Length: 218
Image 1: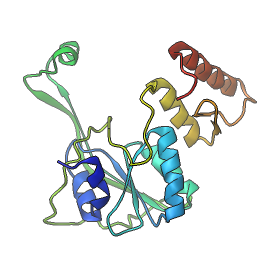
Image 2: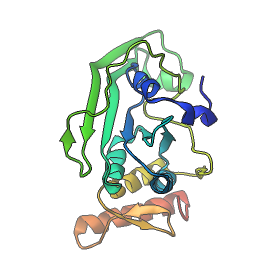
Image 3: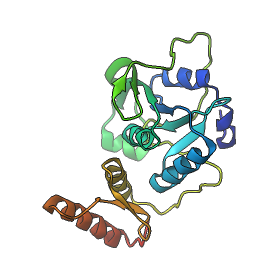
Image 4: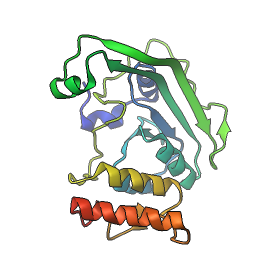
């Protein structure tokens, strides 16, 4: 099983092999990211709790889950990107409340199996033909020990704050995707302006959540 410190040694072929596994996380690969641009990626990943790693012997950056955020980030960098994942989901056959309490289920029920999905985007976010070859053979997929919706590794030097409300974080991601402004005091993305009733409502919703959870910032 791979440790956090091993992630920068993962090859492109191994990354692709991982995305072909059922129940793997989605991976978005951003092309040709320079050292200075990687500092920007790391800053955004820290703000939005993203999980990222460099791909061995390339200038590519991989982002785990958070596909829409990754596509927006690639547009900010003016870089093309490619999203890869196996579209599969299952649920426990046991009562969900019981499963949540005990972690036990006698079996699983497949609720979706649509196969392998690849989507590529150009520098401004338009969908294009895939540019990474995913037709690989005899490559052993690494075990990242990650869950499709709860990836837990970090990038060295960019430690995440432990006190974090998921509700606030999801709103911060939403506003980042939609061109919102970063609030340095709150460490959170807010609506880009408050000129409409919806913008005002979204702003107030964030402020109420901060108050509710007793957070000064994310």
